Image (cartoon, rainbow, N blue to C red; front, side, top):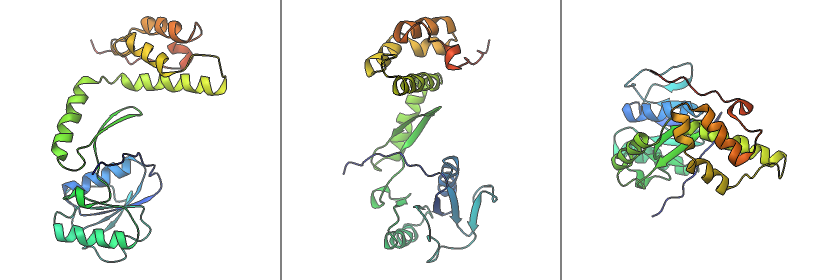
Length: 221
């Protein structure tokens, strides 16, 4: 069955991870990065996690541990235990992910690649998470860190277009012209003058990295 991809805003929302092994700890750390409140239920933890940032319940899962949760992750490493967590989550109407059997859950997690505020996700619909990770790693080798700066430039153009209609040509075609003009390569090598020339050509003479408040990172020599 084809999954429906979404990006969730979890800041300030409670998410429960049941299982303190390596998989459960990865889920907990990922949720913390997203700003979620995390409740971690497990008799023991396989690695350190800041207890001041996490509500740790140091015992096996029991009814009531999911109260108030927006999302649940069952990652005990035991299929029967994970299904018990999933049954409780569904009784409460909370979406649940079964780490060991993604196809049995309500959602699965893709392999994620981040470039600043650009997020790329690769999913195999839970059929082969390892393959999704391999493809993600191949994309990691292809996409430079400067893609994050492209997001900043595109976001600035969008804001200008929204607040001063007609001031610039903000469109998919304009963004294609930026990328076709080797914007990624210019940013990667730190060619600020070349980037400014390209911005002038696509958006007008008032546009430059300086006007956008963007400083190119220093290159290692």
